[in-house]
Amino acid sequence: MFLWKEEGARGVAGLPGAGKDGTRTLYLDGSGRFRLEHVAAGQYVVATPSARIVVTGTEFDVSADDPSTTRVRVESGVVMLTSRGARAWRMLELRAGERGE
Image (cartoon, rainbow, N blue to C red; front, side, top):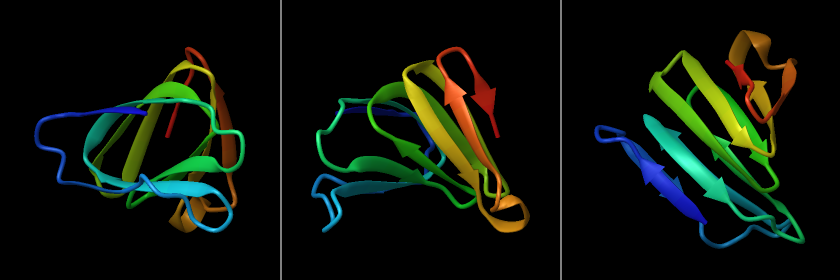
C-alpha cells in the first residue's frame, strides 16, 4: 500500500490490520492519493466525513477538504463511491479516468 497525503490533510487513521471480514479502513479528513494492491480476501475502505469509498486494488485521489463534499478521481482500477447523508442510497462505480462526488 502506498499513501500520499497532501500537506494540510487533517487526519489519516486506520489500517494496517484487517477487521474480521477482511476490511481495512482508513479515515481521511483532507486530501490524499492512494495506490492500493489487490487483497485476496477483504477490501479497502476510505471513509471521509461525507462519503465511503470501497476499493479492491487501484490508484485514486480523494479530496475531502470540505466536510460536506468528497471528490474522487480514479487513475487505474475501479472504486465504488457511496455518499453519506441525504444521498446515502446512491452508489457510484468509478473507473479509470472518471471522477465523482
